Length: 223
Length: 204
Ligand SMILES: [Zn+2]
Image 1 (tube, rainbow over the protein chains, first blue to last red):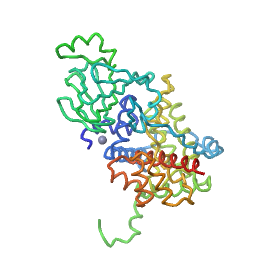
Image 2 (cartoon, rainbow over the protein chains, first blue to last red):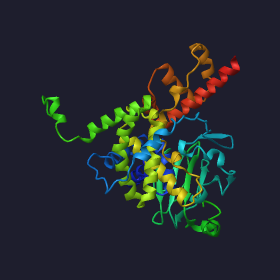
Image 3 (cartoon, rainbow over the protein chains, first blue to last red):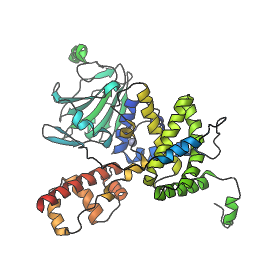
């Protein structure tokens, strides 16, 4: 059951096409998994569309002569729908198979190797080009990310399984945004563990005991 | 809602967006069916200037705005046969096309690698429908034979296929039944059908 959704402002900006690309990717993946937000985005698109194209919308100043454009367009042939090439949306780790939402399917192949982090944590980095880097993080049952806060912003989407972080319990499809005001310690007690897709724009800042020793290296992890 | 008002009176006012939507929808369908140029001109004349106003506000640049208008309206012409009047209003469809084109234009402008392109983020309304219904299963096969093959499918795919093809549910109903997004129902169906097809080939 999904309890954590993107803010309405973010959904609207996503529908509008004005939110930052990395956030848009997270929202898009969440929307794939969440019928509620899917409906909200559809509705927003409808509203924005009818606003932009309302009969009374003002048409600015002297319009150009559209005739050439119109004629030129009508010369072009109909678009042929390319045969849908099936992109595998299955992400594999250690014999486990995870089904990725549509928006993330293309990363099932682009994912670098899985590496084992501290304890029962696995990480597979995803190169987003100039948008930076994202990670699939898999917590085995009993896996814990040491307590940390964030210098920047951390987006997390639960792809499979459940985890908790001392603040709340998260289920498949849940989406959260954490920043410097949130301190948490993600861990999974689910039998099947938990796969999340996460992005941070600045390294995490570990806050508890020995984990502080990790700070100089934190950009090696969840960057 | 007032009852008993003659239909006529609804139309005696200035064209309400809704009425206009139906009209534009009908034109678009005609363009899609028969490449009707007159209908397209109607659509173009309504949408192009409004799109230009929007683009000017968003992009603040005449040349870019006109590029957006041209690319969007070209798409409308070329993809009109994909427009599905039952799935939404023309204004929604055309807006989503323009939004996606604008996104890709801005990225190109900033010299961004086109790693994440608009179609990844927003599958366009109409193109989402180019799916399952186009994949037709060989009708010769009996349910019993199919049943044997079904056993080989992953459970999640099998459930979806059974609900659609055996219980006759719509994809939307299946999404609700299993509490999964429509997109997942579609992708599971597609993957399952592909798998089944392959298995059928091997069986021959
Ligand atoms: Zn949601």
